[in-house]
Every structure is written in structure tokens, then in C-alpha cells.
Image 1 (cartoon, helix red, strand yellow):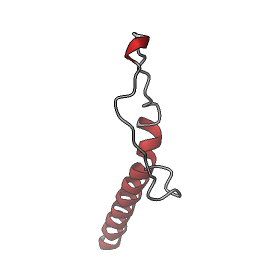
Image 2 (cartoon, one colour; image 1 turned 180 degrees about the vertical axis):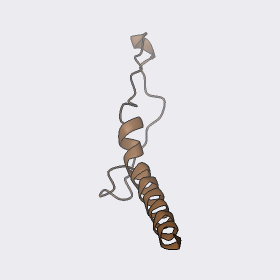
Image 3 (cartoon, one colour; image 1 turned 135 degrees about the vertical axis):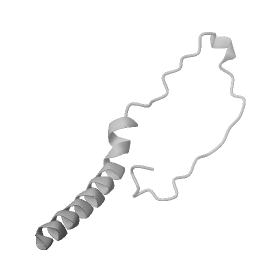
Image 4 (cartoon, rainbow, N blue to C red; image 1 turned 180 degrees about the horizontal axis):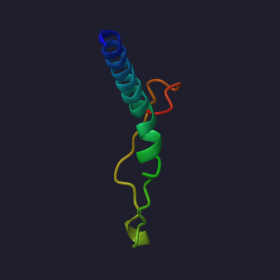
Length: 65
């Protein structure tokens, strides 16, 4: 009986940790993949640039962030 409880708790902890890690990894691909800027400018005269800048990617090997 005691062995069964220990095995059950070990499986619950490992399964919970594995599920949490998998969820953290897969979350951006499921819920954030379709967030894309779809705004359109109605008035072409208002299309002048107000600011300029550059973006850097701190770690190019990190595809998620």
C-alpha cells in the first residue's frame, strides 16, 4: 500500500512538472502565433513617418522571443 502511494505521488509530481514545462514551451505557438499587425491606414496623407529606429535581436537562435 505504501509503495503504491509513493509511486502515485512520484508520477503526479513528474507528470505535473512535465506538463507544466510542455505548456510553457508550446503556449506561444498555440495562442500567440496569429497575433499579427493587421491595421490599415485609411488616409494615405497620414502615412508620413513620425519616428525611426532600429531593432536588435539579442539572441538570434531564440525563435520564440
